[in-house]
Length: 127
Image 1: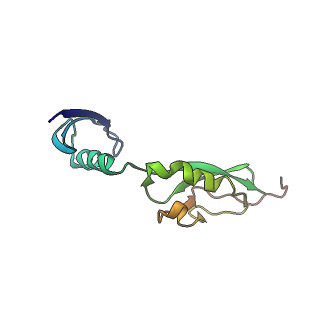
Image 2 (image 1 turned 180 degrees about the vertical axis):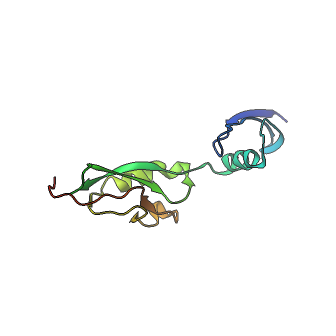
Image 3 (image 1 turned 135 degrees about the vertical axis):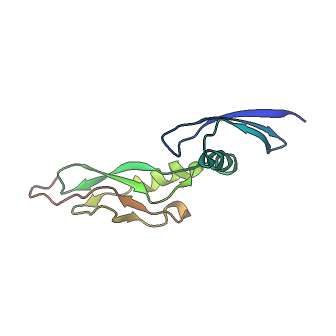
């Protein structure tokens, strides 16, 4: 059987371990470079279903700034990132918004919510 080699850079902690993996028949035969258990878990998750926290912005009216930073409240499958971004394209918020307010529930059926990542007070002048 062929041995496939894959390289990963772990993004779980600040160490950023460079991890090399050898796979045979889809199974991990060896793994080198991870300095902690989190690196191993990261690679195994990447091989099964890559997950990411989505961070982006959505338009907001009546606030000092025109865009509100938002993120998912938990990791979602990487393959669904663009689907979530499409859902957010139709959203325009109105100030005031508080940090951690839920902007969109159960986005793309993932069970994750889109939440505000800062407070946005209402301003006297609106856009």
